[in-house]
Amino acid sequence: MTECDVFIIGGGPAGSIAAAKLVQAGYSVEVVEKVKFPRFVIGESLLPRCNELLENANMLEAVETAGFQYKGGVAFENENNDIKVINFENNMGQKHNSSFQVRRETFDNLLLEEAIRFGANVTTESEVTAYDEEANIVTVIHKDGSKEKYHAKKVIDASGYGRVLPRLLDLDSNSHLALRDAIFCRVENDLRPTDGTDGYIYVDVVGENDAWIWNIPLSPTVTSVGIVCTDEYYRSFNMDQEAFWNHIVKNDPHASKRYAHATRINEVGFIGGYSSNVKRMFGKNFVMVGNATEFLDPVFSSGVTLALESGSKAAELTIKELKGEAVDWQVDYQDYMMIGVDVFREYVEAWYDGRLQGILFSQAPGSTKIESKIVSVLSGYVWDTKNMFVTTPTHAVNATYKALTGKDPHS
Image (cartoon, rainbow, N blue to C red; front, top):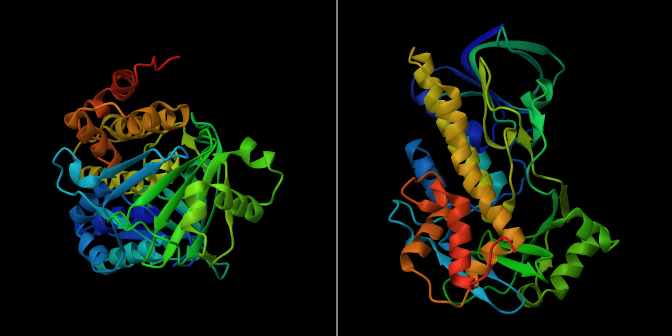
């Protein structure tokens, strides 16, 4: 039996930042990861809030020196040539107003290496197969087939799409969002904007909001290109994923110009029905972080932000608990995390039902103060209670939509 203070399932961003904070506080941490790093994963666009969380964990310097693509904002455009450029500098005065576009295989590996440098013990290519919640004992099968049991004071599930504890403890729940598909690959030598937004993520609306395309520059020559749509829309084309990706990119007025002379550098990938949820985020001896809890949608690049926020918060609360201080996991963790999740969810729903696009593409003169609040949300500052788009997200979106468009948001 291997003893440790904290056992972490998964070595992605949520697991790595939790491990880094815990070992820096003096606790012994075992991280077990199912696959060998580096490994490919999507979710390549970060938000300024990520920088703040990484800085607080003493991990930002390593990220800043890694040479990732600088990201100063996001641009939304539709087929009517309406465009809205969001510059993160126009936020509510938060400390960080830029972030990075990252190859996740490099970024995730870097964070895991930082956790190791701080003192975490990391084992890869090993799978968690059982969990005794009462005794807080985790069973692991290693690559060579050997079995090992770990006893911890706290277990943190950062298993991402693997959703280890939700599966083992029957905690999976249906997402409140419609299930959508993502079809994606990377290309080389696309034609970039020349107005200073070449490092921004561009979000292109396809048709009458039938789908949208992400355009994420990962280096001066390489771009990640993904199409997000309902499964019904994807299947209506009766094409395989490669043919569908080619068709959408070739026929979209913006993408067709940007990628006219670009070449694909990997196979087209597919993730179907990606949204997920859980019945609860914590138990007597465990807490779940990152995509092991809830994954919303890639449209506002919230995935890594929620992963880092939850991993960081779970580590902070675990440290308090290990010190013998009282922690109310419902209030201090789950309710706290749901503030940000609910804000992002409202924005996702408003994107797909057209309210947010109505706001972004409105030609009516808007308030600079209101815009800074929207920019702050899109920067990942979705726990800032000075922002009405955080404290009352649905009301704020509806009121702004009506003021700018003159339309009833419920019609």
